[in-house]
Length: 492
Ligand SMILES: Cc1cc2nc3c(=O)[nH]c(=O)nc-3n(C[C@H](O)[C@H](O)[C@H](O)COP(=O)(O)OP(=O)(O)OC[C@H]3O[C@@H](n4cnc5c(N)ncnc54)[C@H](O)[C@@H]3O)c2cc1C
Image (cartoon, rainbow, N blue to C red; front, side, top):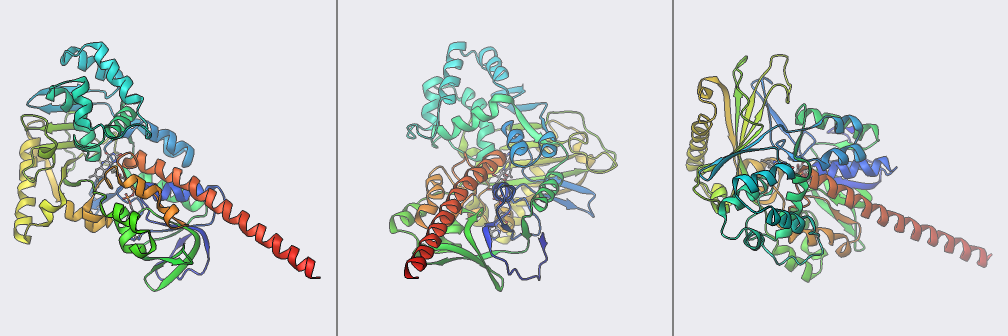
């Protein structure tokens, strides 16, 4: 049921989910399908979190924020935990293009294609390429996490900055990782992508979220939007409810799909956790944020096929600091052609340019400098796009930009983080219920549990943990009831 803004909730639930990102929604849907009473609360006026879109000029233009590409696994996850119709809309991206001073390459982003490029273009021996694949595909959570990405690449491709760029640049774009992050984060994400290429949802984010919303409602999830949870209620050492606006709602378990930092320090309060846990939580680093430029073309204007995803950079070499610098040299263009993103009756193209960014670089600007930087970014994005689409300037009807400040404002993510926390956040997130029974976290953490697939899968993992908790609780309650009945019988 969709609960109206002014309606008060009087029911108690099995689970309250705070936040409707892909993690929160997948968790809510699975638990509701399994017969649990679920309430989904979302601060925003629409579901989806980062899986979102916006319209401009009376819906003449539509722009997707994070629908650029995900691994094939998303199809399986959607079929299993959502429905076949959603899974059937997931299609493979035709062409990924890389262009920078070191090389220009087109790829299908499959293992076979990567091998061809590494051997033929970069002249790497086939045995080395295969040894690299074997190594990263054998990585798992329990491996030694001390090896960095830098050390991994040095081990297999010593001093080959061009090869590192080819293998790592798309992953940096996809999750903000750096050469100093644990190699396991790269290995798992890259192997996932490489297995079967890059995939997308045909129809756009508005369509997938509408389908997910219908599925949630069909499975009897209660949904309330405009409901920003201010506090998670703790009683007798257990999380048991939430407070928002002027009401409190109670449940057996609470799960936050919000930012890890905000969950611990704003919604719960450090007094409810051990000193050791809080010390570690304080040290968790946020991942990088993003800038985007949204370009809508005039009615009837078409463009040639230049690739679905075009990774561009003018920086002479691969450098993860340069990828996030305020002085932008790298842009990834997601090109939405009318066939893949049918929107209007009139075929229309849109282009979204994305760049990873440091929150502080943008947040520390005065309002005047901020506006000037935004305008500079827009101008330079058009200049860059002209290299691939020479007539683009005349074809543009609408253009606007978002920065880390925009990300923070719309998603409430601490420091506008686009990809949750760095790897150390995973331990804090997964151990939350051990610290505070009844409280779970299913939001982007540790790179592996972020992105469309990672977030959805983390929702599934946490739904299983909550189910075990609820079953234990029910078993204990039924044992207590038996004992009470026995005692009453003995007294008689
Ligand atoms: C620019 C950009 C490009 C991206 N590109 C890709 C890509 O190509 N491929 C890919 O796989 N991933 C991409 N991602 C990442 C991906 O979109 C996210 O990792 C994923 O959608 C995060 O899902 P989540 O479940 O962690 O929740 P989020 O999307 O973070 O959503 C959390 C939700 O919780 C709500 N919330 C927070 N606090 C509260 C509160 N107190 N009360 C109520 N509600 C609250 C928020 O409003 C939000 O709706 C991109 C991200 C960005 C920013």
